[in-house]
Length: 263
Image (cartoon, rainbow, N blue to C red):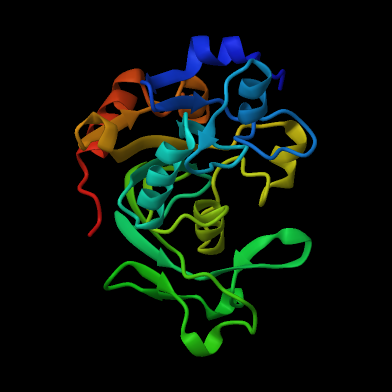
């Protein structure tokens, strides 16, 4: 991927901006910050004379809405909202499989293993599925003897054709790689995810995970709620082009937007 200039990012990716925050529709393939062997958005902005403070992270391979604060005080207030789990986060996902229920909850603790790799804190065969509740979980006695981080992801299936599925995923917790690892470990990896598909990584294929919607409270706007939407581009839907028309995509987005947030 050719790294865009900050001017190009601003010209093509701004979803919302005011005196306190900037929300960008991040392209897949560029990090938010902390990229050791390349350029990230925070660095691009800084080189152009603009200082930004990311309120959350999305993975380099993930596209979509990312929220930045323009000052430290605003950043502190936003990160508290993420920590208190009052931010509404919705991701669009294309899985490399079908067969998921209409709705589901993945409650599988995460751990960090060798080479800093995120995994479920239990053996794969210990994962249980409660068909009555459409819930994946693991018993306390089956957890590995490692530090683990409780993690919960809700999802709704918007569409499936027997080969792929389109989901709306809502992570309750915000662990690194959470949606990607949760779906892969229950047998439904995200299409093109280099963590689990080495051929896709070698071919440079896109990962079909997109930060679609963000909702947060804006104290600097008289406390009003701000809802930002980043509809994915045509490339996100590319592998489904033969099965989904533009009208189908528009319908799925409308239906996904009306789904209630899980309690």
